[in-house]
Length: 387
Image (spheres, one colour):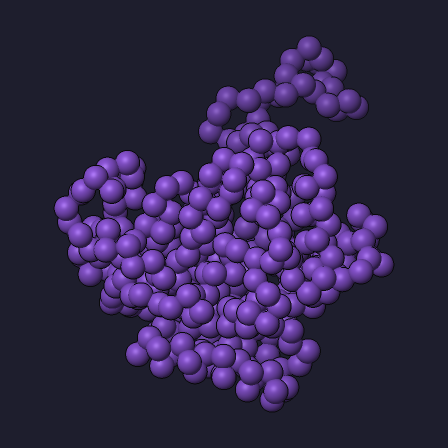
C-alpha cells in the first residue's frame, strides 16, 4: 500500500514558521506568518515526523518493532504472524492469516489515506513474481530502460561483466572513479561499457528465493589481496545466504584482506542472525567459509603477533565472536568459494556456475521442472560439503 501525502501526517516538534501562501493571506493580519503544527513537504523534519507517527500507531496497535531493523514491525495473534515493512510512504505487509491481513489493511486505512496496490509485483525498481515454489526478484524493466537511456540497447552483448584478460588497473577503474569523483578516462568508459554489454546479455536474470529452501544460515568471504596496481587496494567480497536466499556485499579493504573481509562477513551474519530472531528463527554457530588458511589462523590465534599489529582493533571482533561460539570459521577450497565471483574476473563457465549457485537465475515460470531441478542440483554439493 501507498500512503497519500504521507509527510502531511507528521506532527512537528520543532518551532517552524511559514509565510502565508498566495491567495490565502489573512485580511486582518496580512504581515503575520503561520506556525506549523504538522509537517510540510520540503522540511528536513518531514520524513522523521511521519515515521514517528506511523511507528506510534503500529506500536499502539500491538506491533513489536524489529530489534535490528527499525522499519520492521511484527504482530502475533495466536499462531499467526503479520509482518509489516515500511519504506517512507510505501508499506509492504503480509502474513499467514488472511483475516489478520485484511483486518490490518482496514484498520490502517481508517487512520491514514491509503492506496491499496494489491499483491506485491513492483517495489523500489524491483519486479517481484510470486508462486507456490518461491519468489523471483528481477530488474528486467530497469535494465532495459537504462540501456535505452545510454543508447546501448542495440549494442553487442558480452557473456561476462569483465574479461579475464583485463588488467587490475581496469578492474578497479570504475571503483576509483566513483571514490574520487574523477573525470572518466578511457579505461573507465571501457569498463562501464563492458558492464552495459553484459546487462544486454542478461536482462532477465534475477534472484530466486525457493519456498522449499532449508533455513540454514552461512557466509562466504573472499579477498583479492592488493590486486590494484594503482593504490594497492584489495577487492573483497562477501555473501550471506539463508538457505538459497542471497544477501551480498562488495567493498574495498587494505592489507590482511582475507581477515578484514571475514570480519565484514561476520558483521553481516550477526546482523542477519539478530534480524531473523524477530521471525522466531534461532541459530547456533554459523559457518563462515574462507579460502585463506592464514586468515583463519589469525582469527583463531589469541596472540597478537607482529603480522597483525597493523590491523585496526575494530576488525578483531571476528576473533571475539569465534571464541563466543557465534560463528565457526571453516576452510573452503577456492573452486567452492561463492564470494570468488565478487573479487576477480572469471571465465564464462566458472562465472555462470557461481552465479547459479548464488541463486541468480532466469525463471520464466514457476512450474518449470528444469529450473527446479537445476536449483536442487546446484545446492546438493554444498549441503553435503557443509554437513
